[in-house]
Structure formats: structure tokens, C-alpha cells
Amino acid sequence: MEKFKKLVFGTLFGGLLMVAPLTTFAENDEVDAVDPNEIISVQENVSVPENVSLARMTLHFNHSANISFSNANRRVTATTRAYRGIHSTDSYSRARFESWGSGSVAYDSGRQWSINGGASTARSGWEINWLSYSRTAKTYYGN
Image (tube, rainbow, N blue to C red; front, side):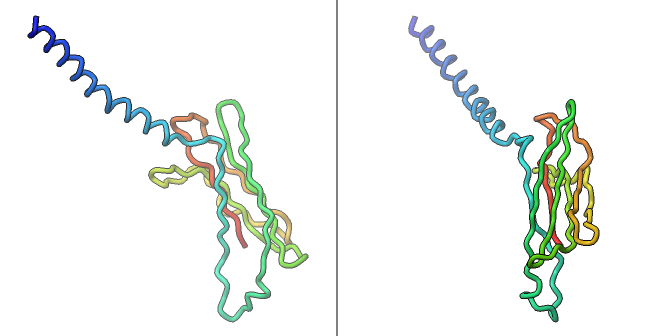
């Protein structure tokens, strides 16, 4: 009877040690999921030449970004308008999806420039919206 108790206890304890790492792995796996509604926007301006005063280069941006959904697809759109004082000036918008792990880029709109100080609008291509596959939506804007 004593051998039977040791066998049962050893089997239960050994099974518990084998299951504990699997539970921890599953919990960590869920933390890394990409939020399909998150958009990261980054301002990137062209460098200012040394002979240009920064006082004349003060810019303000109105930038907005959103994600559109159609069936099982999604795309990110960015719109930017730049102002120097009270006057509109040209700007660009860029919209794309980036993989958080590898940094690879997909469905990039490229820089879409405004015309005559108007608003610039960029739309990425359509991405399949699978939670386990989705990339991070990113927009860039600047002057």
C-alpha cells in the first residue's frame, strides 16, 4: 500500500510540474497580441538646412488617422495639414502596416504630398484582419 501511495503522489506531482510551464507559456503568448484598432503616428520632418532660421520654420500639424473595415479586411488612412503661422504649407502623409516582430512593411502608401498647401491624405492597401496575423497600423507625417 505504501508503494501505491508513493506511485500516485509521484505521478500527480510530476504531472503538475509538466503542466505549469505550459500554463505560463499560454499566458505570455496572449500578452503579445496586436490590437487591431491601435494606430501609431510618427512625425518625421525633412532636415532644416543650416542657413535657415528655425524661427521661420515653426510648423504646426493637424494630423488624424483611422482604420476602415470592410468584410474581413482593414486599412489605415492618414490626413495631415501643416501650418506655418496662420498660412497653410505643404505636408505629407503616409499610411502602412508594420510587423511588430520583424519590422517588415506591408501595404505602404508611400509619401502622399499635399498640393498648394492643402491637406495630404494617404491610404494603405487592404490587409486581412486576422487577430493572429494582423500587423500594427502606422502613419507618418511631416513637411
